[in-house]
Length: 216
Ligand code: DX5
Ligand code: ZN
Image (tube, rainbow, N blue to C red; front, side, top):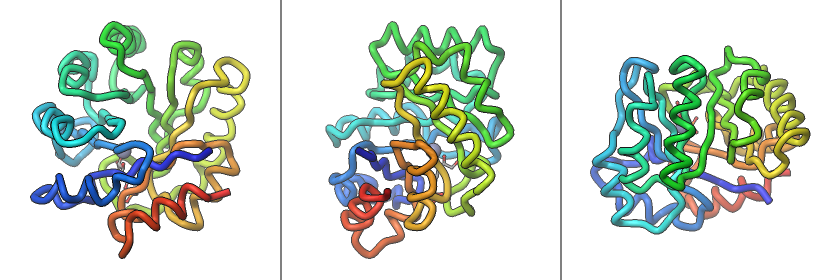
């Protein structure tokens, strides 16, 4: 069964509580944290995640697009994240391993994320301990970008690695997911779909979520 995780990057940050309620039919809530270093954009940090946690019971899927994420794992866990994704490009492998250890110690689900330049094989050192792999289908940083079809090959390769080493691991895709591309990524092996503009740009977000969930 496909899960849908609306990205609040496309929400109205002045009406965030209402905009979270509009997507309460979704499986997860995707929260994009950007530091202006790892990606050119700056979004939200720990206090906002803390506030979101106080206002919803939804599963908080927190995507850290920040340099040296190990520094902030404890803070985001305490703020109420249910799952954290750290980018493999954001630090040395030993520090990525530290970040994953910190998630484990906090009882939070563990994920690594791949920019489009990063090959699927980069997940191999971590795969057995992961709850999820996130494959970016755009360059991280902004909502509303065009889906990169070249990432379908990476999704397929990650799916094969997951099936071989850790079949319970989820495979999330993020960027340009909408009716038309959702079917392609699901066919390639993704089972969690992040969608910002396709959900918040729809007249009826609940219907958009249901439509994406049925993608086959
Ligand atoms: C981009 C973010 C995405 C973004 C997706 O760097 O990681 O989560 O919100 O937006 P759409 O679905 O509009 O491409
Ligand atoms: Zn994201």
